[in-house]
Image (tube, rainbow, N blue to C red; front, side, top):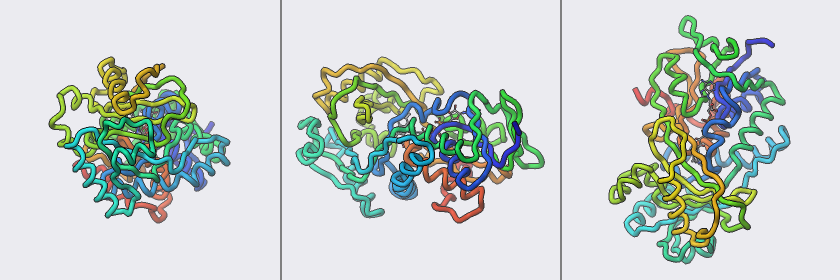
Length: 394
Ligand SMILES: Cc1cc2nc3c(=O)[nH]c(=O)nc-3n(C[C@H](O)[C@H](O)[C@H](O)COP(=O)(O)OP(=O)(O)OC[C@H]3O[C@@H](n4cnc5c(N)ncnc54)[C@H](O)[C@@H]3O)c2cc1C
């Protein structure tokens, strides 16, 4: 097997496989290097919301709307190219419920801003109105936002579909191949050393998610991507109980406006925990989640499980007698401003970043893949890349 190709992509998560697929569609020869197995990182330990209202108004929300709009076509394309159904549900809708009066004004003003800036179909509703959409919601809640155009997808199937579609074109997928160092010559990245030999390419894409900072260090760069753990409970299979994806207002506060949390107990702030729920195509519920800084530790804690379960029952009382069958955690690739790091690295020619998507990587993956392929092929960008430069952290 040749050890040279056009582009080496490091990381077999949703971003790396999306990048590989977009490049292969443009006829680049690609090798995707994954230290373990495809989807063994965060993309295999996540929800699959394609939501817009969870993104900061401005560039983040704009990117979310554009990337989310690509799923319709992508689902057909991947089914055709790889024979895999990514279980994309268009317009399943998403609700964000408020359970404390003091949280209402922030959510209402965010909704106003999002709608005014983008014409996004999002508005505030009373709890009675929300219960017409989701009758399982507790009548004791206050109300919240509803965005009917949000969708959902199966993230693992998305990774496998991107990878299979890329492989059917011009990609070699190399699992159990850990990149241990970059090979840099005269200021240009020309290859990588791995646990399975050395590989060379014209371009190297760092799509190592939460671990992308470690890869960047190999290039002498300090890019502050750090792990932010999210714990999730999985219930037994149930008949349909909800059709939207739901979160509580607190999940947005933890992500976008931590000030709103100041009146909450220390334990809740530390765990960064709110309520979210999604019913998967096979009927299980994913209940979450936490947003906590605990290094690279992927353990699930009793403290969080206990809290998530209690909060889920508060929002959906019918869950009182439901069993949960397992739990897992994933590490969101957090950046200090919540935006991903995408684009060329000036100091090292041929080295390109595509990481740091925090809690939005599933939604943002289709557009990220296209943007990286456009950067490499030097064609017009579908979305401006300047705001995603690593240099903003200098
Ligand atoms: C609980 C939770 C809920 C979430 N919910 C949503 C949601 O509803 N919607 C949404 O859009 N996003 C959500 N996210 C965020 C989303 O899951 C992530 O942004 C996304 O999965 C990141 O994908 P990635 O490809 O960048 O990283 P990863 O999937 O982690 O992929 C990176 C890969 O790189 C590999 N790697 C690392 N170092 C090396 C090396 N040296 N050599 C080779 N390979 C290496 C890793 O093994 C890994 O497989 C959630 C995250 C969590 C934790």
